[in-house]
Length: 220
Image (tube, rainbow, N blue to C red; front, side, top):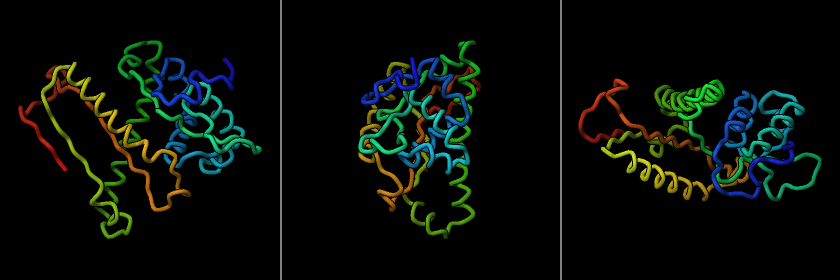
């Protein structure tokens, strides 16, 4: 395999299943930052990303090629030619079996690094938003978004098979809606902001110390 031969065809729009090798490739902190920047702000070159992240274009170029090698990013159509490659997060996204990687001694360290960083980032962004709402309720950006932003928790009794079916349906719904906004950038749609949607489906088991109120609940 070479840097120009990614694991996943660049024209594939199907969701990529992260392999153990790809997981290790994603564990590098700069690659995670590059992937996040492309996810939030759309296609960019190594030079642009280097300026945004305070890194050299040589470093960003190398790690972008590694992300492409493992199938996380590709070259967007319409940005061919020129002196530099443009990069985007591959259509279809990717998923991984976190619990399998965590339970395997050979992948545990990489999984802890990748998942730990992901969970911390999710929590920080939500905490930053709620803090901004609390401390600056009259800020124009807060007033613009406060009615649209939401936070909810729901409970239901399911079998593992029902939960898997529900998760597939939910992911399909989110994916179909997400395609409507694919390819947008701050330049092409200046009236938009990046919106983060988090989902987590898991059982509340007595063995884990979780409580049970025996009823469905929802909070906004």
